[in-house]
Image 1 (cartoon, one colour):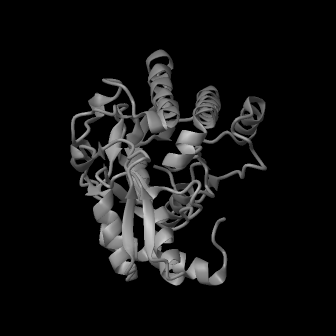
Image 2: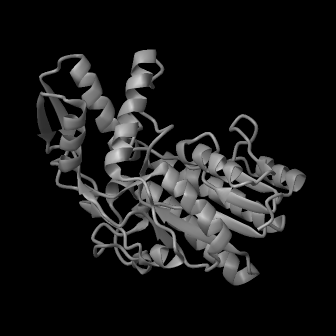
Length: 315
């Protein structure tokens, strides 16, 4: 791979996009192009077409997406489906029309059926009904995967589709209306301790299990697969191990030294009860995540405490 090749990374200001941008720069890539939302609205077909005609990127890493936690997905299914559908369609089509040599697409473990056998293998996609609480987002991502398959079949367009497990780490959102589970738990317990709250009420029963991947490991996986993986089939990216949400909450509370009671509101949904991916294909490529969950949680706690002390947290 030529380190001076022009690479367009979408979503470079987000948690994964910003980390991926840094990882590629550290690896010696010198011709990376980016665009903020104000500079390029990826849902605007004409704007995307003009951008690609002008910039002519040789490679595209599509990370930009409408993302959020369980509440955001429940409250705004149309937005999660529409925005992701339109962004993907615009970027994929313009990439093909302008001769992009390789397209890297970032999906999600949400693509797998609600009742999927565990651990979830890549071939389980579209073998059953989706989890209703994030169906809009999941359908959007599945459509992106299938659109790339169609472009490969009809036009020979080269792409790879990476399915990471739940991401967390630096530059994650702590906005409780939109944040993912790990960062939300960190904020809830840090705030509760500061306020001497006697208890913290959490959604669901705590029996659901999730697999967590540090954002730096995901960014390194993107770089590794960009340079080494050329099979068109999608590939799962993650540690291949999950943890119960109750166990995770108790671990975070203990690390923060929060002495109060954990109350589980079982009138709220758990979401998909288990999402652990089979990462045999990833391991076969030679890539392995390096950041342990314990170390990663310590880092997120430190980041949120610093933001909280500086009053720079989300609403």
